[in-house]
Image (cartoon, rainbow, N blue to C red; front, side, top):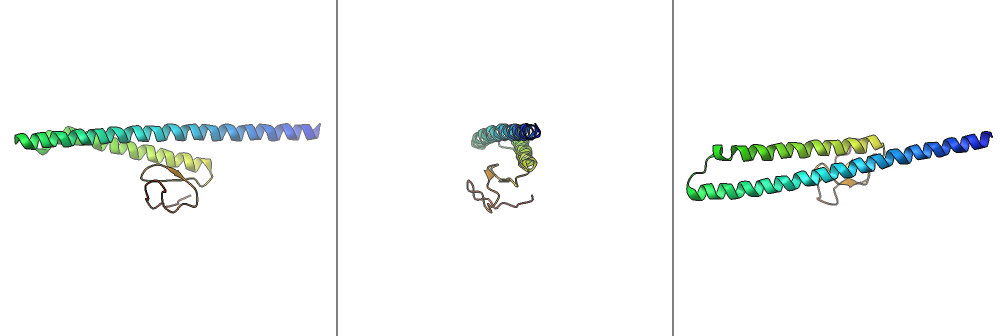
Length: 127
């Protein structure tokens, strides 16, 4: 019976590890998706700001004040992206596998990476 108890204990531990890793993978995917969505919103807001800026310039009514709300919206999205990237880094750190996340684009990299293979950003490893 001792052998069967040890075997069942090992199986239970394995299931717990798989469950934990699955949760981390799901959280990583959700966070990456949120980063991508925020970056698309940021690009859209920047394009709209450019169009608004050009139209105001063309009409002779361009002022910083007229663009303030749009600029603040873009800044808020940038802050959101940075917070999401920090969450992504934290998820990798919690996995305890020395996961490396690109500080620029959020891509998960192999632990031996020195540069992001997606955007080329140098990676500082602090794990």
